[in-house]
Length: 194
Image (cartoon, rainbow, N blue to C red; front, side, top):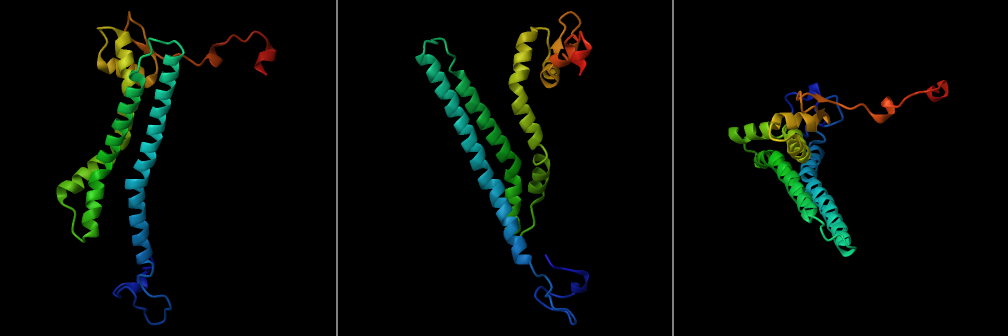
């Protein structure tokens, strides 16, 4: 938007004496970019997310059907259900994150000031999108670590194991990470070092 210091006190479209370019030039384009970006965030991105997760779910269902057809009678059909639940969780977190901002933009479009509650909710939930994604992503790993750890393992310990990818010593309860296999192999000759 073209609004340099010499345009202070002049309305959009007015040209100050000695200048050729009118003040406020480009405001219309900025509004189009603003609403185009909002449209993309609220409608195109969820469409892409939903399509991708739908394709993944269909792929899992297809794989389960193939396994059933070729003799795997004990195939647990819960994989496709887990994929569906995870897709719904990601979608809910996305909409929870952006709903209040979109409502606020609706107030902007109506040239009305945002209500204080909407402003606070938008500023609380927008930064939490990454946290929601982390919780959704890591929750199956935490549940798996908790079930493997037995009755004495707390949810916090299971979270640490899932987050850091370590193993727990049952006797001491301490978590340690395993180094990559490439770092633990024995080097027997100097040729292996090169």
